[in-house]
Length: 134
Length: 134
DNA sequence: TCAATAATTTGGAAAATTTCCAAACAAAAA
DNA sequence: TTTTTGTTTGGAAATTTTCCAAATTATTGA
Image (cartoon, rainbow over all chains, first blue to last red; front, top):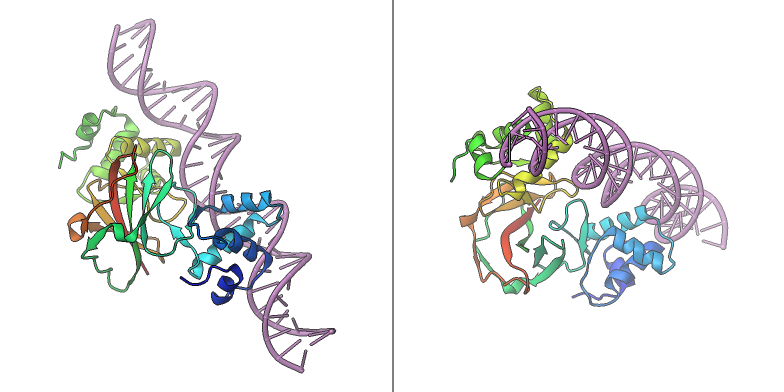
């Protein structure tokens, strides 16, 4: 994996190292933990740290990170909330329908054969399994 | 598959055959088409048909249908919109990241081996593959 | 270094979607 | 019937996200 040094990450992904981005990058990539985060969670952490960053900027930042592949937007979980995953490697999720929590499943825990071809005109950019549990 | 007769469906799923439910059941199960619908889509169709049903009732109805297994809430697609799938059989989806559209993939088109065990205390209620395309 | 240019941030308003609520209504049971 | 239970209604409220125009910050290149 590439370095997790926040400044380097921004640099190598063509993002200006502005204050909000550095703060968020530090929070998300400063250690090796993978996280499932929402804009609200990030904003709350910043607030706790006494850092003043507009909520709109948090959204901008997370979307920018996702655009350049630093984060992945998860298509699972509670409707109405965008969840970003710091783990952009292929992997899967348990989704607990009661708690609305996501848990990672390593990619190699499952074998999938015959991944269907995408409709023509489209190409596959990724795939994942969502296992719903209660 | 069980009969798709709307009244019978309501009956066998323990739902009172009220006016809004019959209207929605007709719209969704009156033919053999599978559909991915939102509350807004249903409300619009009702409106077009000159049927007066409160939006809150459309939501209630769709949630009730999902609760009894007549519909499945899809965990994919555009954030912020609840999509209900009339196809409650196991199957998968292509998700087009550009258009936000979902396309069905029949369950037997893919072989998945070693479905991981759920975390203890939980049990698997379903699973699906989401293939993201562009 | 300094201006010019381009990108980003801000805060607040607006949009979009869903849920909540209490009153009215309809269906089922007694 | 009457009672009880479940459902619908419309509007307000809640939640989450996006939009916007102005201010700020970073970068470029004289």
